[in-house]
Image (cartoon, rainbow, N blue to C red):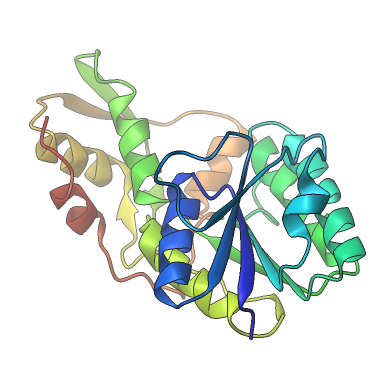
Length: 254
């Protein structure tokens, strides 16, 4: 069982939830961040940059396990994983846990392909590992809906469903994995409901008390077709308990 655990991206949306659950379990938690520790930062703190490798060796020294929640846009995730696995192997880390995205092995979205390549680097690194793929987070669906808040019309993807999940549900699974043994690629984790993009946006706008016309649009291209085919869904794993409506009820209306 891992007692000393490093969480990368520990100040992010998922990372914060993971850190809180690990602390609740009595684990000795170290947070890796590019920024200096905030006044009330949880656990112990390590400052380093996964993209360049600066400070990473010191951050992983002496920990039993690493939960890799840090992520970037573009291909910097690949550099980060290479630097992290190299440091973990030198330090003799017993378990590296990575959170990825459902459908990275099928969906043509470039970001997903990068995630798949990052998974492969971990699997081939020599460090004992576990990878968990999750569906989209609730807050991402909200951000996509509200990015059009200045428009009288909210466009949605026609014929496309999503299965949003709460980060707290993902964090719970990640902590259980972390306190267990390395297991390779484990079963996906999905939200409790599969719902159309149009329905999710309507629900979000109603919760925010925003009146907008919601218009489904059928867009061309392989990426959008991948969403219509449901490559990003895990209907056989509706493991999350917190619904999208539950999540919205916790947000301020305005």
